[in-house]
Image (cartoon, rainbow, N blue to C red; front, side):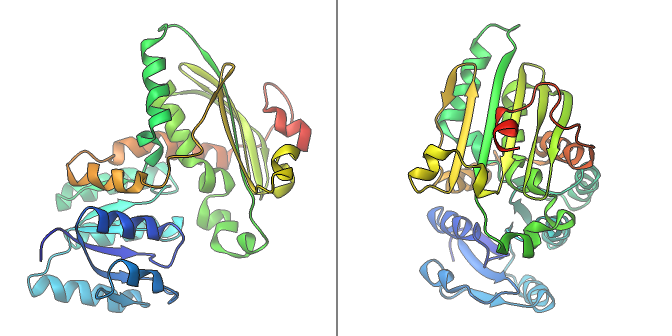
Length: 316
């Protein structure tokens, strides 16, 4: 068999198909996958002969057996619920594989430190899927800031509203303990992108923190960021609703809107190409955003004071 051997944990999830496609697009093999849900017919379009398990113990035994017979797993792709990422990354490293993990890598900053130790012990690597860093519009923005005046502080507004129905709050995503809450679950890659472009955090204020939305003010070295994140359809601007859309995404830097609604489809494949070429985003890249979302989760919201996102007022 040519190519590298992969296993996937959480293959029934929404994002897993992008990983299946990326493994296929990079000419590698899916040896086995795991999910407690068995609605995984999508595997047939990519790797029909790969093995599938609904029980972790059997999956673990199978991977171990393969290793003893000489079929080593090179990478484990992790698409499981957020609170399980830490455990599943450890599984991958113990098996002698590198881990490719969806965002958020882990829920707490100290989890990153523990994984660094296990990386050293095993000699394997943990890679984070930070696909926004590979988006052409975001790369162009980073270059523009780097080439602009060094002392300029930018005003940034970020709004991301992705409507979710009642199922969301019944699922693991609705539990702060399991998902990290709305800012972590739908916002972590935005905080990563912002700190990647505008530098480290100077101030982190939370104005609103509810089950279905969060908003705050983030001061970075080179930006003042007002952010608003929501899974509530009612927060969608009227004009967007009238077009029948259930998602709204906007980032403005000064007076300029950064257009990045398109161009997402193949970013997982680009992520995989980078990792396979030894250029993936490791644990050190994940730290900033994990620190930001951890602090947001644990801060007491101050309400509508200071410099908050205008959507707070419109929808509050």
